[in-house]
Image 1 (cartoon, rainbow, N blue to C red):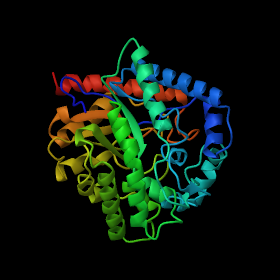
Image 2: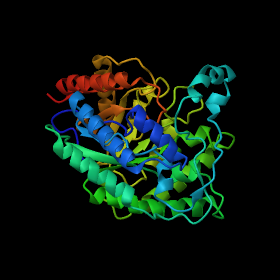
Image 3: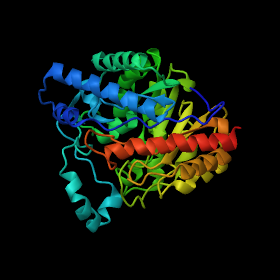
Image 4: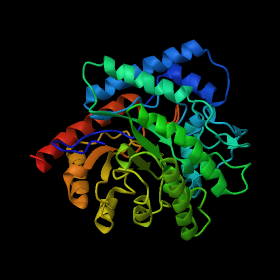
Length: 387
C-alpha cells in the first residue's frame, strides 16, 4: 500500500454513482429478478469505464471501479455465496427513530428507486463461497479498463464486505450462534479476499459493523456488549485475512453513510484500540462530518501502530456542500498533526457516495466536484507539509 512519500495521496471509499439504466437493472438483480445478461454486462462495462475515467480526470491517485457491478456494498454476496434467502428485518438506526419529524422529512427519499440495505436476504442454510465468476469478472474488467486509460492510478483497490457486516445485516436463521455464523461467513469471504489480492489489488474491507451497529443492533444493550461484539468481528476478520499481508489491506469503518442526527454514534475513542487489533495496513475513518470532525484527536490518545496508515475522511459524502480546498487542506493538516507524520496520511471522503444502487445523498455532478476539491486540497496540504 502506498504512503504519501512525496505528496499527500488521494483516494475514495469505494462506491460512486451508477447511471440510471444500470441502477434499474441492479435493483432487479438485488431482488433476484431476471435481467438481460448481455445488456447488464455491457452496462457494467460502460459504467466502469466512465467512472474510472472520471476518477483519473479529477486527479485521484488510488481508485477503483466505483462498485459499478454491485447492487450494494453488502448484499452482493448473495449472488456469490450459498445459504441466503428470504428477507432480513433490520432495526432502524436509533438516532433516526428518536426524531419522528426527521423521518417524515426524509420520507420522499425512501420512495426512490434504490436497493434497500435494511431488507437484505438472511442466512437460511450453510454459508459457503460458491461462485468466483463475479469477483474474477470484476477484477478482469478493472484491469482491462485501467490499462486502456492514457493516465494511470498509482494503485488500484477493490472493496469487499466484512464478515461482521454480512452477519449483522443478513440476519441468521440457520446457525446455533452468532459466533458460528460470523466464522462461517469469514471462511467464505476469505476466498474473495484472496482473489482480489492475488489479482494485484489492494483489498478494502468495508466494516460499518465496527461502529454503526452500536446504534443499530446494540442500541438497547450496554456498551460492553457492543465492544465484545467488535472483538468477535475483528477476530473473524483476521481469520479471513490469515494468509494476506497486512500492507495489502485497508479497513473502512463508519457510523452509517446517511445524513442524520448521528447523536447516538459510539465515540471513536471507545473502539479505536480494538480496530488496531485488525490485521490491516491502513484505516479509513470518517473525520469530515460534523459529528466526528473532532476525532483527529483520538490518534494522539491512541497512536497508530507502527507501519499503519490513516486514510482520513476530509470530504463529507452526505452533503451537497462542496468543500473549499482550504478546508480540505486544514483537515489533512489536523490529521497529519495528530498522527505525527504526514507521510502516513492519505486523504479521502468519509464514506462512499452510493453504498447501494440508488442510495446517495449527493447529486452526481457534485460528487465529482467534491472529489476535485479533495485533490485540490491535498495539493495545498502537500505544499505545507511535505515541501
